[in-house]
Image (cartoon, rainbow, N blue to C red; front, side):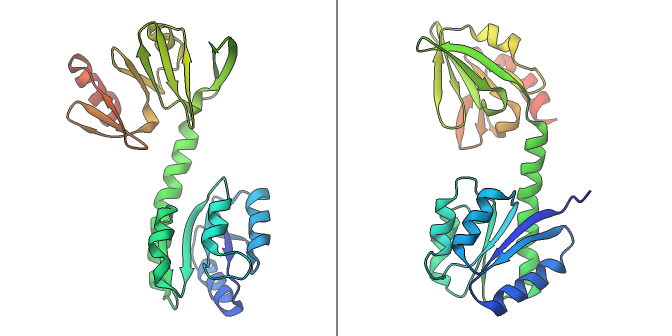
Length: 234
């Protein structure tokens, strides 16, 4: 069984694609799933194959690399490869891990891949540490099953709680104490009388404030600060 990261290479120039294939082949930890010249074919592969790392040209016929990446809902870690420096800002706005200007050396390629490896390993660690199961609550007169792995944090709000998941907020008539007892303690922590956080969403602590992924700021109660530091940072 291989632990290599799966790569898709996309470039409409034959020589550029061949060089990229060689560089990937010479890099331990990478495995080429496909190398293609067509951005349309690349989208098909991204929708049908698990791709960890995408090497993507920008200037291509029919569809640019920037437009291609915008159209994909599940974005892999992406390194742009292009001869045009003027697109760098747009590329990094799409969370590209690096931007290789042609012609680039194997040393420069390797530097970009090392940055990608850091992010890919973080993603793998986060996936491995995600809890299983669902939290079932009643919201708007309906029963809703919330994947526990999607919960970012929970805020007590009068007699209600607000459950913040990936792309929405669910409000339910529930006790924060009951949720604290229900959720797996190895994955969630009560940090304030009004807040429970998912441990794997915490990035850092600034004074008495936790910074979660997405720059969400959560207050930490003074009485809980030592416990929070011990659990999350030691």
